[in-house]
Image (cartoon, rainbow, N blue to C red; front, side, top):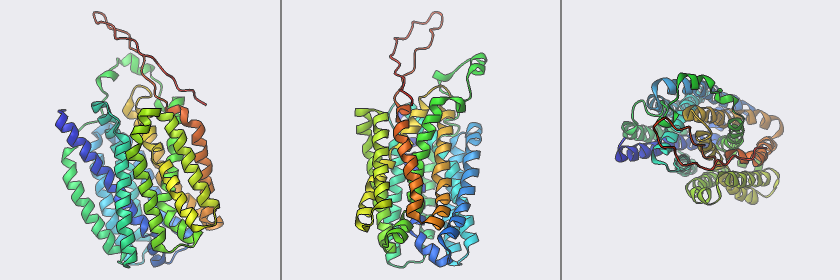
Amino acid sequence: MTDSAVRRRRRALFVFFLIPGLAMSSWVTRTPDVRDRLGVSTGEMGLVLFGLSVGSMLGILGSGPLVSRFGPRPVIGAGTALIVLSMLLVGAGTAASSAPAVTAGLFLFGAGMGGGEVALNVDGAEVERLTRRTVLPALHGFFSLGTVIGACVGIACTAAALPVSWHLAAVALVTAALFAHAYRAIPAGAGGAPDDSEQVTDAEKGQRPAVWKDRRLLLIGGIVLTMALAEGAANDWLPLLMVDGHGMGAALGSAVYAGFAAAMAIGRFGGGFFIDRFGRAPVVRASALSAALGLAVVIFAEAPVLAGAAVFFWGLGASLGFPLALSAAGDSGPSAAARVSLVATIGYVAFLVGPPGLGFLGDHYGLRAAMTVVLVLVAVAVFLAPAVATRRAAPAQPHPGRRPEPAHEVREPELP
């Protein structure tokens, strides 16, 4: 690809990461209104979110094989189309006070996001390889930027008592226009084939272990699982957590969520400086500590103002774990696309499937108590951080007649 084509492709990926963030925050900021319109309890709201879980699992499980067979482009297109349709169905279901319709809409959203986002991360890792620049944190930053924009609009719509159906219909129109604009820049068949550095003989392929047997890759998957759950829990439950757990009004609870999304965007857009200066492992460790601090204050502090302020540390800490783990997966060994797909799948399982389970815990013990599960898992990421340390590949054996490549230092992470 030419440099201009790669730049267009990168800009298109920015847009495709923006779209699900915009759609998700639009839904999340209206969850108190949706719950009231449906007349359901917290536990029943968890059942509504179960549609999101089922759709997510189907999308996640189907994405890897589809990307391997067709490349990321059609999977990205189908996933984004489902996200657009889901906004229309969730809005219509809310207007009709139909929990099954809202559940069906969330099923479409989960299928679209679960499938499309895995393909987007595979394509983003390919752009990193082509440009030899860190791209994934900025791509995920656009997801967070989308959540900030959607949250701010959602707050205004909540304050103005705009019907949820009108709000989500407008979101569907905007995301459809963005989709149509960006889709042309994603090349067909990209990201599915290995690059030249991964060309191996059939005998060598037979000697490769399955990626899911790689101990380091599984530790990276543990990091992305915990940090994605920290992000997903906020995306699904933070407004209700502030309303039910700390006595805030619906608009103020949405404003706290907007603060979380802003912290995520700040961390992702500004994280490159710290990654280049300190490396991935120290940044992941500091991120996990920040998220744990924020969660602990939100859970145990009684002052609503203090809890709302602590959300900033929660968001800042959760911002970099996911993209950094994906970057680490991409350079953890051969078959980079398969490695990124596996870790992205683990992350999206936690991101999309974990939060509904928190709803069932919240119905029995309260949402603040349910968040202690997230707190404990995030604390585990502090000890898993060495798995993402930069590892340079050892030189391959020279072919006959070819000058040997200069040796490079191999720096293995100290695994727990």
